[in-house]
Each structure stands twice: as C-alpha cells, then as structure tokens.
Image 1 (spheres, one colour):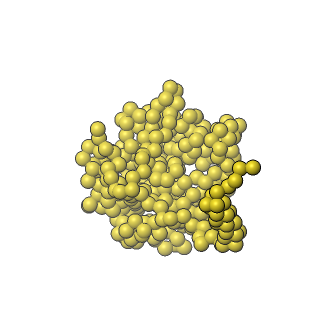
Image 2: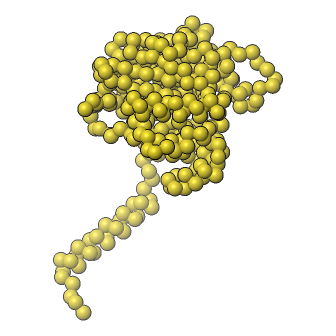
Image 3: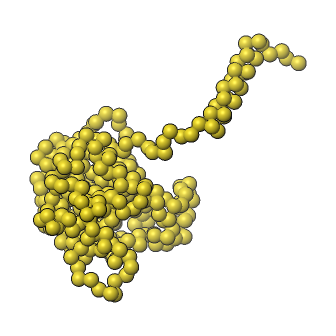
Length: 327
C-alpha cells in the first residue's frame, strides 16, 4: 500500500475539518437577509443621464397569461425556467439637465411584497421623489402607474404626469357600466386610486402623439396592449434609446413568437402587430431599447435572425459609461 506523506495527510484532515465546519454553519446560521442589493443601473446617452430602476418583480404563471400555453410550456422548459415566472418591473429616470423625467412608476402597493421598490432604489441612486418634475406613462396599468400614489398620497408631489388621452378615458374618467368585466373593474379602481390625486391637483397633461413631448423626448402611439399605449424615443447628441413599455412580457417567448399575446392586452391582434412593428423599427435603426419587463436593467438591442428576433442585452459595466457608443 502506498504511503501518504504526513503533509498531505495533515492537509486532508484540515480540509475535512473545514468542510465539516461549513456544513454545521450552513445548517445553523440563519440568512442575514432575503433581500437583494439595491437595483439601479446608470449610464450616459449623449449629455443625458439614464438610470434604470427596478421596482421588483411580479410572479405570474406564463402558461396562464400568454396565448398558446403549449408553446409557452415548451419554451420555458427549454430555457430551464420554472413557473411561476418572476416578471421584472423596470422604470427609467432621465436627467436631461433641464428636467428630471421618470418613465413609468412601478406597482407601488398594488402587487404585493415582491414589488414596490422603485422609490427606495431611486433614493439609493441619489435622487428624491420630490425632485422629479415630469412623469411619462407608457400606459395606465397597475405595474406602470401604480407607484404614482399610495393610500391616496402623491408619491411625486412636484411632478406632472403625461399620458395618452385614450388611456385616461379608458381607465380613469370613463363612465361606469355594469357590463364591465371584473378585471376591468379592478383596473379602473386601481387607476383611479393612483391617478386621481394628480388629476385633482391639475398635474395631468395628455400628450400629443407622434411628436415632441419635451426637448429630446418624443412619443409614438403603440396601441393594442392598451388604447393609449405609448413609446418614448429619447435622443441626445446623436444617441437614442426607445422606451417601449409593454411590447414584451416574456423575452423567452415573444421574440421568437411575436404573435403570442398576453391576457392583459385590450386588443391582442393589434398588440401583436404593434410588437412586430417595434421589432422591425428597433432592428432597422439599430437602436437601443429600454424594456419594462425584460430582466433588469432591461437595456439592449434587437437582432433579427432569419424570421425571428433575439434580445442582445448591454454588457454590464462597473462604472458609468456611454449606453449607446458609436463605432
């Protein structure tokens, strides 16, 4: 039998001791926290500063909310993705030097304990809610407008909210009817609770579609998901980024299959047509995209591969760099 050198034997005993100790610690020591680190990501777009802010995530069974559940089940299995999926909720802060603009506000208190972190992450990023003077809503849904007000109190007291007139009429100022679905009744109730405080304070402005909202930011009508669903194109010094709201709910499914709709679409067929049109625009322009429901920070490009599309996320940087570098 081959002899083991004393030094090797001592090393083996030491390593076994460390392994045993680690097992004991793992069994006995409680986790210090179940929370992740503050979630914000910052970069420059020309002379504008852009900060992605996470509001958290919304757990949903994609098989239940996306059309074609068999296909969805197959794609999730291929991607090793469990159900329910944690759908990211992202928002974006634009510092144009003239304005501090927030695009969407997260879910606030509407979606439970896995979301509602936008304001805390905003503060971690070095800003206060009262500094924001403009809020651009891609649309009125709980995970985009829900963070406007909590318990009837405006969370951004100095901000003016810009939103499409069609969404305002559909979700807030509409005349109630007993024929409305339970889903729509809930959406209207939530929308009124969060948007109404700004209406009463005369801090809601309806945007003019397909034109400049403020210098450097223009809007484009992208209906289907909601009647007034809106994308915002932000441009500075030859650099651009498109914030497209809810064009995508599942990057694992809808880039390959743009025809797959989500249960929250008011007009599913129109939403699918809009999605395909936005994919084509983003690829033809080779434009950077900010997406509310793609893994944080939700920034990347769209690449066409054959008849389908791929998501190409930006490379993570440890320092604040140019988000849209030009070769």
